[in-house]
Amino acid sequence: GAGYLHSVEVMKYLNEHVQLFAENGFQTPVLPEISARAVSGDRSVMLLWDSTGIGYSKFGYRFEGFNIWQGVGGSGPWKKIATFDQVNGVTRIWDRIMDPSLGMVVSMPVQEGTDSGIPAFFHLVDNALAGGSLINGRTYHFAVTAYYHNPERPPFSLETAIVDIPVRPGLPI
Image (cartoon, rainbow, N blue to C red; front, side):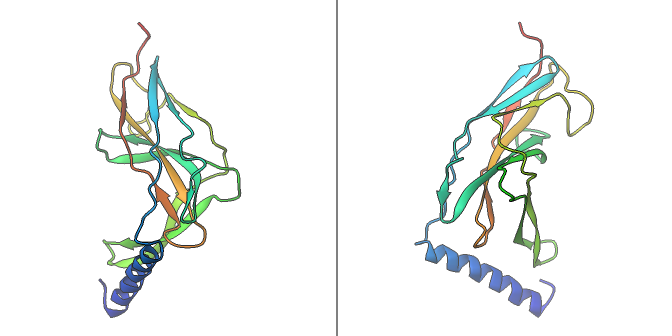
């Protein structure tokens, strides 16, 4: 870290998480997997996902929204390109994060909702990474994650893992 005070702050942060883990009977929330798929179109992609997880409520976490990601490749790096969340007044979710580059705990936004509502699909025509339109015959990598919010205790947000959905836009045969 950056000195004694930062080390104490990191220890407090870690202690807080260990204490919550113990209070939950040494169990962690198991988030529901999101079932998502892509349908290709002419210079377009339609991402579709199910409502699995929307009713999830465990350890104080409740479903809040979906994030849409585009990756350079199947293993990333990934860029968040859209967020859809419940219309409930919860938009920006802050949390304390251990920043390894600084060697200290910082408070920062971890989710950025807009109270947009929860659709079951997202239509893409633009390449969010390279700019311009999607190109027929080229493989693109997308993912859909769900995130959950606990307003009472850290960590204040949990998110499902990114699972690559490769898709190649093109004209129907």
